[in-house]
Image 1 (cartoon, rainbow, N blue to C red):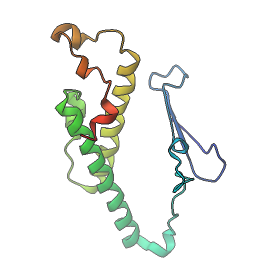
Image 2: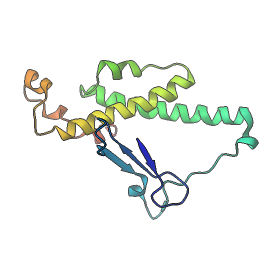
Image 3: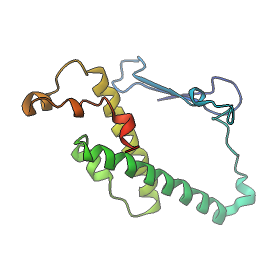
Image 4: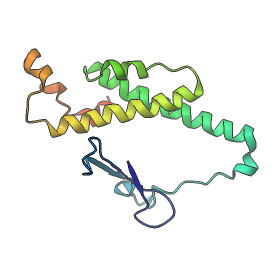
Length: 151
């Protein structure tokens, strides 16, 4: 993974992934692609004064971030699961009890599901092993995975 501040405003706005280690970008996402008139700088966030917040405040902030990430991960997981797009590895990540686990598992649920989508979309024109064994599985080909969390 490579993080970049392409607009030089002090906030990271672009992430590039090389999933197979061949030094070629497999997937790139830029927050700047999501600019709107209401939010011209989607990469800018409020900075946290760690000294002022102290342990109690930082713990509350982290708990909020962990819970949000966990809920996002579960939303994506449930949508992928309904469409048969999960793996045993992903299924194990769908359970977390501690705050640290929610933070970790929420991130990895989203990452693994979307990286599987990116990988599958590159192979879209070739039938997968699953499709060869289970017949026509066009709805599982990953064509609508980005929309699956909305339904």
